[in-house]
Length: 295
Image (cartoon, rainbow, N blue to C red):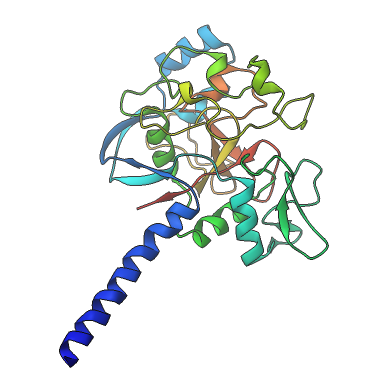
């Protein structure tokens, strides 16, 4: 009988532990499995010239994407949707709005563009109607802290790009043909969606995750183009074999990278899967949010 009880309680403890791991994932965002394998990352010179001809801009706009190269990744999970104000408030109410650098907090709660607020009791609450909109005005530190709290992490650039473009090297998550109505960008004209936007600037702003199911990535990940740009984990650095590197790139190891473009972008070239944007880790803005990864 004694041995039976020991085995029973051992089984019970193992069962509880097994349930605790996915509960964090279930409570803080649905995730999509990205299978192990190789994909094409970056852009080559010929594609850049073609992009300039089709979409406008100049070589300097796209030079951070050089050169195109193959990357092999193990399997991983990535959030299907960007982290919401509701989820971020849950985190803040547990962790507080910590200051990481002088004057740099997890989220700039004092900004009029922030879609959540702190009430008189000190609770963080989404502004009414914006519970399921992506959190904005969050610093890189605030994104990383949330990911750790949720039992996840921020994606690397490679993980983000593969989840966005798949293995065929597509320009945008849905393919190689631009369609302004497949993502939240400045020129999107769907009136039923525009009227749902908070008025961040000129009547425009982010939208709830999944508002453009037709713009999903090959793996079914939503809003990888437009809506909000997304923090990645590592410091910016040039890709191996970068042809213009002179050892004095000012942005290397001083800036973080955001991916995907945002609702404020009006040029299709800035909304491609390969586009890299450099960003100060301590500079939150109304165009940037994030999503998480896990093993």
